[in-house]
Image (cartoon, rainbow, N blue to C red; front, side, top):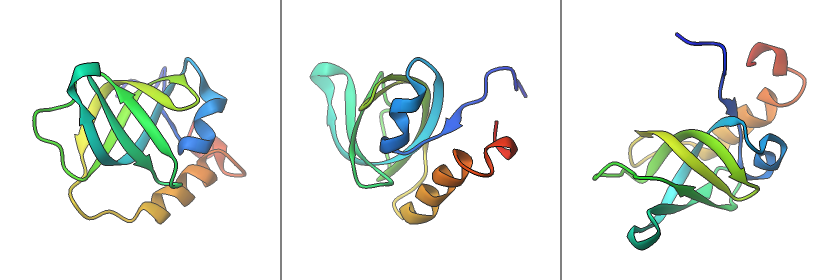
Length: 108
């Protein structure tokens, strides 16, 4: 396992803190924009995110994305992982908050 460049757990609100860095998040897929080679999704904090890059042919409702924070509302994906059609967004959102707060040292 390569730990030299860990992906930080984020939601849409936290994304702005990590511009140009590797991040990981889970989105609820809203739509695929094939023309722009991107996926529009809802972050675990309810905000919209754009994930750029070639998604897998088959996407489930919830997808984890690891990639580079491109802007405060977009990520350039390096890896996509289907998380199924049922997912507790609130728990992941709380994890993101903890991973960027008091317990940050446990995650990075």
